[in-house]
Length: 424
Picture: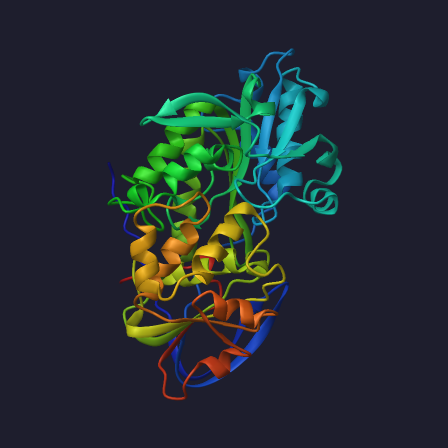
């Protein structure tokens, strides 16, 4: 296998820095004195998503979708939910046009919103996300699943409306993911439209503790390998995915799920990696909408920084996460379990030890956050619910500036979920 070496740009250090950090649908302006470094990934040139989706579907990795279907087939398409900024309406346009090319009418298609254990999307949210295709959509229900196979002894379950489909397709966002390395591919359907069995297995302490399960890595990653094989079991035959940077969508790819993820992950690495060689007293990790609506999702910023390829924090260094938290801890089953574990714990170390013995699906975010909190305090700023934050083993502050000391060496990562911190 050929090895490609990418030379990443270094973050630029300044003595006085004004930086924008996302908050909800807007941003906050930081004016920080002292030693401050801003880590901005190189990014990429945004593409016309509609045109690139059409081209990707016409020239996919593997056979065209139209060649895989018969006119009397029933097709299931799993799309992402409100926690992902995937342009699903545009991607559905391309997929439905290709299915029509294969003789499959729109009425033969069921669109399933891949929720996993997140809350259902509202009618207004479905209309905003799917446009004219909202009438085809149904929210996934993890209590309505059937077993369709087994992988590594784990039952693979699938939402009933998809179980009888002749072919399952999926959309998705290939972005850095704490466990899968990068999201997208079969993950949208396996986790988003599956039951608690595979969520319990994949997000349990035994698999998450294996070598290779880490942010930004897909090769020799047991978590990603399981998703791919589970995707085979449920019949994910075609996917249409995008990848993006803070500048917008920079890549679109379609076809065989493994090859699509590999394609877009390579693009994402080049666009999102920043080399950081120094160590810092504090990291300001930006999130923004839609992820900062809940503490469950916003906490990813802290774990992505501290548990990525390179942890830039000094011993005892702290993480500062501006997040609106308009939905509090979050409203789904997983979010509820996340909050319960954190709010009932006395300290991060004992919580981590307790959860290492096992936990319910959805609670894994508390387990991973506890792992970080054992070494680094986390402060959430600018939220609407500081009492909730402090009840969950975290600190709360009204502003980023209030969470920092004047003498701190600070690294600002404006988009922590789409920045891969690496060593030179």
